[in-house]
Image 1 (tube, one colour):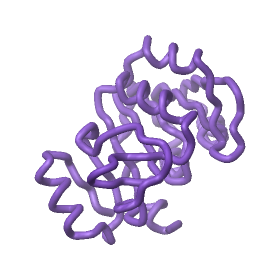
Image 2 (cartoon, rainbow, N blue to C red):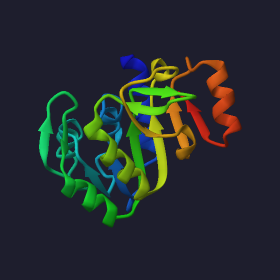
Image 3 (cartoon, rainbow, N blue to C red):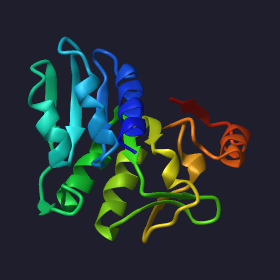
Image 4 (tube, helix red, strand yellow):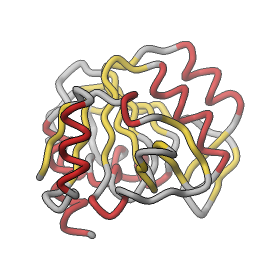
Amino acid sequence: HNEAKNRIGKYAASLINDKDYVIIDTGSTTERILPNVGIDKKFTLLCFGSNIMIHAITKPNIRLIMCGGTYNSDTMMFTSDKTVDYLSRIRATKVFVSAAGVDEKFGVTCTQEYEIDVKKEAMASSIEKILLVDSSKFDKVTAAYFAEIEDFDMIITDREIPEEWEKSIKEAGIELIKV
């Protein structure tokens, strides 16, 4: 789903404004955001994924805050209690969140339990909550639950989203962007 993920990342990048305080979750779709951010864009970025950090250090106008901890190579994510505590004390304008599954009954899920607290706190600390998922993630459940679909203000996905999901998202009052 590389092409869909690229389009999703490009659209998400267009939502970042100068002076924003942005949190970008680790993930194969969220890592497509920063390559599409203009070199002149000035904002603060908090991340906890090495895949996000690698792109951020190439952008001289991004103020980068990297949360550390134990490195988990399967997700490229650093985790620690200090990350969760730090997230609880900041307020971001936007958080871009990834997910491995989105299901009507079982909610929004990721693959690893250690991701749960970080994702939850990043969402709790942000004004605008944006879910980035390609259409293959709908009607899929993975092991670690972290949110309900209604917890998001916006969902960015590709044009292959199932019609019943499109209807359900709009009925929930969530802004749906299909790219």
